[in-house]
Length: 169
Image (cartoon, rainbow, N blue to C red):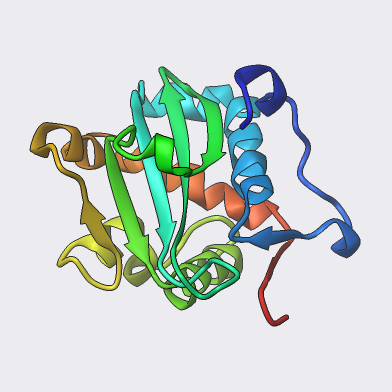
């Protein structure tokens, strides 16, 4: 588990040897660090207060699901963690997709220099519930996804700055 102190001022890796594996806590921590270092952009988008869960349905070593929760408070990411049983229910909402879907989106963002094409935004990919499913037990909490969508998109768009590797590369 990471805290606010470890998330700020974290530079993105600069060499291929420093590439980050997706999915991993380190990958999401690097995104959180980039967000926290780019306060001006995130201030422009407004406050974001939620716990977003990103679930990779086939991302665990055994081929099962693995999930990561990012806690956002005001205009920063304050906590990143791989979900353990005791974390269940902390999330405001979860975005669930296969590793192939996440990879395609991340690669599209990178190819666009930090901007996905219109078919690869979080909104487009989750709009009809496929290939990214938006889940959550509380409709009001699940609504956080829509309220904070642009901030979440900007958070994910920063992945263009991360040298990313995927299982099997």
